[in-house]
Length: 288
Image 1 (cartoon, rainbow, N blue to C red):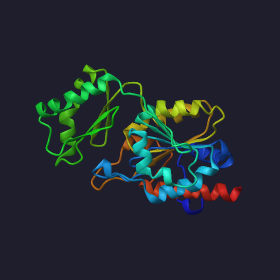
Image 2 (tube, one colour):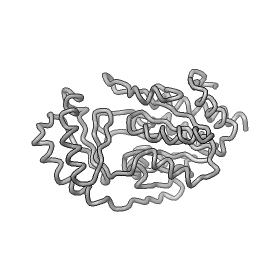
Image 3 (cartoon, one colour):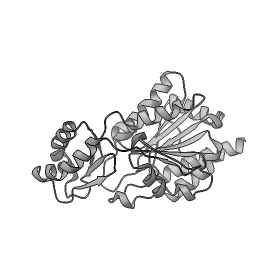
């Protein structure tokens, strides 16, 4: 596979998905998580930026495929800005589905669709400081306000796992009291409205494209499992797909084992994803 010869799917389904993508790229959809996949994981999420090599690879690959979509829990405009997408060439038909599909940004027009969050989010925002105080949250615990969701991070604490375990139950009670759900991740618990996840967002996006062929989805954390499930459902219906795990971690963190076990192919973080996307562009371009 040219520069990506070391990236060979380990499963028959993944091999079939890759072959279908290369055979009919104009029908293919490239779907990508942001943090940990396009952008390296950093201690401060506000400092996350897409890996330059990944954006450059997307600029090469995007004009050759049917669609490129970034599916993220971040606000759509924030992901677009942190990704550098508005200024990158070749991304005219890239879409960002932010807040798990509740928000949408189109690179071709710069148009942003962002409805008002449900009232339960404001109630949780108001109640969260008291819950953290009463629960004895570890120093370094902090809250990321995503507008339509709130994420409680423990990555900066001295004992991130213990700090997160301490908060799981009280955060679940707070979310349930206001009609929200909790979504766990690496050293983070997110409180957000029910019925929104990356699988639902990807499924809705693909429903807009009934002629879509092979779907490649790349992610790195527990929140990507619903998107994996969406691709697996398509495969059960006879539609090809390729599941990629971005396994690059912050030093000292464990890989998300469930994601890696279900993936057809693992790459070493955003730099590995860039190599994979570059290799796809090479092969598709040479075939054309």
